Image 1 (spheres, rainbow, N blue to C red):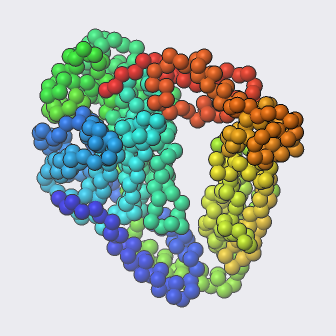
Image 2 (cartoon, rainbow, N blue to C red; image 1 turned 135 degrees about the vertical axis):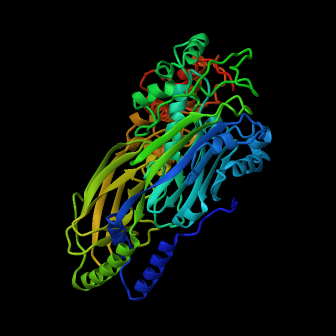
Image 3 (cartoon, one colour; image 1 turned 90 degrees about the vertical axis):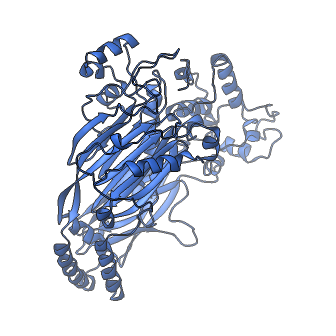
Length: 591
C-alpha cells in the first residue's frame, strides 16, 4: 500500500490544460472553460464504482487485533475505502495539542487490513483530536482522482472544541464531486436535540477552500455524492434496558428500530434531509464490555443502541451490504461497514476533444461578431429592518439576452478597496452565462461586530451602489438601500452606561450625540452615567433568577435562535421571557 497522498491531476485534465494554454496564446476567451463544462455534462455516462465505508469508535484503545475481518469482508476488493474512527485517543495531550501516537498505529492497522486482492494508494488522512478519516483508492483509479481537500470542525466544549465534531475529505473522481464526512456527535440519551444542532453546525461551518481561488468555497451539500459515517450517538428511547435486550434476543430489529432516535429524526426531516440509511439487520453496536460480546455490566448498565451509523446522499447509489462486525472486541463499540455501488460520471474523452475544437472555432467567430448583453430583473434592492448578526437576502435574476456567452463580475468603484461595503456580499460575485441562460444572484446584508459600530453611530447607512461589469461589454449599476435597527451589540460599554432607555427606542437624532461622546454626562439630558450598562444588569439578573443552580452553565454553546431572542430583548426592553438554558436542565454524564 502506498502511503503518499495523491494530488496528481488525471491525464485527461493535463491534456485539457495544454489545450487551454495554447488557446489563450491565441486570445481565446476565458469563458471557453465554462462552455466546455456545460458540453462535458452532455458527454457523460455512468461508471459504477464500489465504495467501502467503515466506522469504529475505539474508546481510546490501541489496535490489539487484525482489522481484516472488518475491512476485507467483501468478496471483491472495493475501488475506494473510506474509514472513520472516533475516540482515537482520550488523553489530555490529544485534546490540547492534537498530537497522538494512536494516529500512526491505527493507520498502519488499516493499511495492513485492506483487501489483499488489490493495491491501494492513500488519498488523504485528516484528524481532529480523536476523530480520524482515511480515504484509499485502488492504484489503477488514482489518475482519475483530483482536487483533494480536507477540513475539520469542532462542536464540543464551548461549541468549538474537537472532542466532538467532524472531519471531512472531498475529491473529484472522474467527473463527480464526492464528499466523505466522519462525525462524533453529542452523547447521552436525552441530548438528541444537541445532536441535531451538532449536525446543523457541521453542515453550516465546514467549508472546503479550493486551490483555485476564483471558485467559491464548497460546503458539504455542494457535492454530487455525500457519504456520512461516524458515532452519531443517537440512542433508543421509550424502552428500558430489559425491553431493548428482549427485542434483540428475538432478532426483532424492525420493532426496535421504531424506537431509534435517528430514525425518528429522519422521519421528521429534522436532520440529514435527503440522506438514506440502509435497512438495519444487525444488533446494536453499543455498549459492550471491552474484550467481549457481552452487554455493559458496569454500574451504569447502559441500554444497547445503534450509535454507529452510515448514511449517503446522491443519485444512482445502491447498497450491497450494511453490517456490524462482532468478532472485533477492542472497544465498547462494534465496528460497522457498508458497501455501496455508486454511479460515477465519466466523460467520453474522444467526443469531448472533438467538441472542444468545435467550440474554439465557434467562440472565436462569436467574439468578433457580437458584444455581450444582459437584462436585470431589478436594479433597486431594499433591505428592511436589518438586525445585528442576522442574515438578510434579496435576489435578482441576470438573463443573457445577447448573441454570445458572457462573463460578469461585480467590480470595485474608484478609490474603494472592494466591490461593496463590508456588510454586503454578492453570491456569486462573478460567473459565466451561456446564450439565453440566466442566473439568480443573491445580495446578502450581514452586520457583525466589525461593521455594527459605524451603523449604530449613524456614520454609516445601509446604502451602496454596486457595479456589475460584463467582460467586453458595458457596466450596470445596482442601488442597495435599507434601514438598520440599532443594537447594544457593537456599542461601547461606556456609551451603554449613558443610555437609560432601550437603544432601539431612541431616535437616531438623540442617540447619535450620546454614541459619539467619550463618556461623562449624557449631553442631551445632563444625567450621570450608570455604573454598569442596564443590558449587563438584565442578563446577570436573568441568570441569577433562572440558572443559579444550573450545573455546567457556560460549558455548552447556545443556539442561534436563543441569541436572537437575547439581542431583541436587550435592544427593545420588551418584557418577554428569555428561554435560555432551559434545555440544559437535564443532568449529564460523560461517556
